[in-house]
Length: 246
Length: 83
Ligand SMILES: NC(=O)c1ccc[n+]([C@@H]2O[C@H](COP(=O)([O-])OP(=O)(O)OC[C@H]3O[C@@H](n4cnc5c(N)ncnc54)[C@H](OP(=O)(O)O)[C@@H]3O)[C@@H](O)[C@H]2O)c1
Image 1 (tube, chains in turn brown, orange):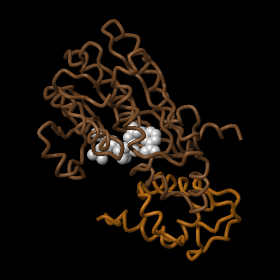
Image 2 (cartoon, protein in one colour):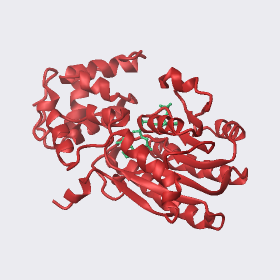
Image 3 (cartoon, chains in turn orange, yellow):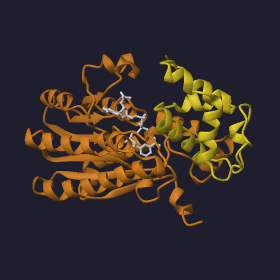
């Protein structure tokens, strides 16, 4: 798990809180990393200059960007599907534009990307695909119905991939994360009162997560240590769900 | 757009509010039973009614109904915190 020398990984959402740390951890271990996101400027100059790092800017909801991106990728040992948005919206106000906004990146783009990766034979035999889902797929929160539904759809899709790609030993697993301290959490905090933030945080027996907690699980799912795992959903929640029945 | 109409839109939405209780200087987070759901409803209501999407930061910077109204008008006219 610690030595990824020469292995080739592709990371979406690499400009986000979780993706960025996965990039760092991969580079530390000698991997060759291809990464994408829209806002390259947030990436550390040292990472951008790393000889084993290639950044390909793309809006994954744009079909032209997707097809340009795919042309620049090598055969891969692992992929992290990390790009996603949260955009909460109470049910009563949902319009088609809200559904499109969430599903186009959290779900549709991932279906299209995995299909292209397969068509172009960019997934090596025994490669491992990891999808970033959320505990809300099973335990939704008010205002988050669309986000939760997009992640539930993603988990089901990942299981479909696990089944279809199993003849080549390609594995697909989802990480169902609870709150991790990133820009996404900061956004959520803006809508919460101080008391609500304290209440949210206190529901986590082990505290809320750090991006490295997720990165470690991604490395595990990419490694041979998880070679018998496919179609699984890994809860990573600092114990949050222990309290879910209260 | 007048602030009085803006207040009416809010009062229509929150059925528990007795019409006439909100003034431009009401602190909206002091509304009875205020929660994060109310914040989401404010953002969605303003989006649906005025086609203005307030960011979390913009919402956080508002204290009174008038602050919300002012930022909505500013954004209708092409402004905003980041503009
Ligand atoms: N943080 C949490 O608490 C948490 C909990 C459970 C699950 N997750 C999931 O984990 C994943 C990563 O979350 P995070 O916390 O790292 O979020 P983040 O910091 O907000 O990063 C989101 C990433 O998605 C990318 N993205 C969004 N829309 C895109 C588009 N149209 N095209 C290409 N890239 C796009 C962003 O790129 P740009 O910024 O460059 O546009 C950014 O790299 C998400 O799928 C999220 O749902 C997060």
